[in-house]
Length: 394
Image (cartoon, rainbow, N blue to C red; front, top):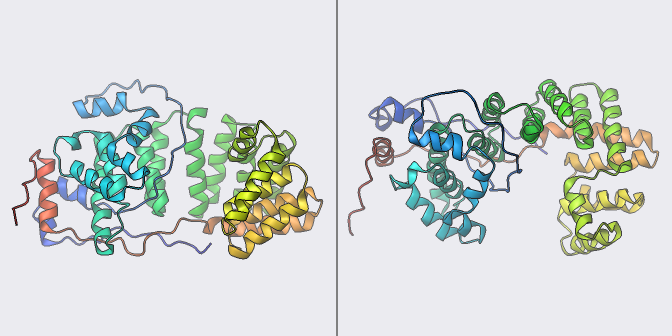
């Protein structure tokens, strides 16, 4: 994929309206803007409570204790605006989210802030309103993070949204702050893997290697980590050692077997019958011929039963549509290696390492937005606990 340029934060120069606000409010509102795709987060186990005593406000007590576990994501998904969004009722979801944004009382609740911010940035129509929504949504999400700076799950939520937008540097910063808070145990291996993958995208493969090695100490038998470590080594210039590590992981995955979780769920849904899973997925691919991800999964299932030629056929079809997708070349490398086509496997692995740093989510073209005086004043009043004035009747 083509390299995604880092999205710049709003310009440093202040508008007259910004200069009129107190420094704390101006700092809150000068943060960069972002949008994101709402996804189901990885479920993480409850971390060890932080034993460090500290003075807390009522809001931070709630955030640091009650919400500092993975159930935060469930709470967010169960808010009315997120429920409406999940049902495709965008206008209803946006209206409910904006009610939160304009309510002094509702904005005391971190769950409300995160849910409203998540929905608001997804309202892309009309187009000229989208930039304002990006700004407003970012204000809410950043406010939630500022209210609970030591809450690991709030920060993880924020970091993932920055990543999904393509604001790579900002996402890395949030993940690194999260690593300072998260315990070094298997419960937080997924977040560390997410950061390692960001390091590859950000062309910092040596940092990715260090992070993958940290996670391997927590999950020594996970073949996907071994493969990702091999790719990071190749991106870092060590092609041969990277390929060897990649092959080690691939062999462990298919010979154990220890399939990718998504593939395993497909097989489990068919009572462990891989052929039944293949039949269903092939029918799905026939209905959705342009879905590259489905074709790659079908190829993985075919490789699992040593049907290498039809697996390569699926991958070739996927490559016609998106040749720079590194996952296509990765699975082709695995398939060719198992067919004993060592040179072809090595070449495909090299393509994987070549395209991997370019595999970034696309960012909206122009996110800069200069809020109006009224919008800034509204946020100033919110910070002071003053409810916004009702709109004058027309």
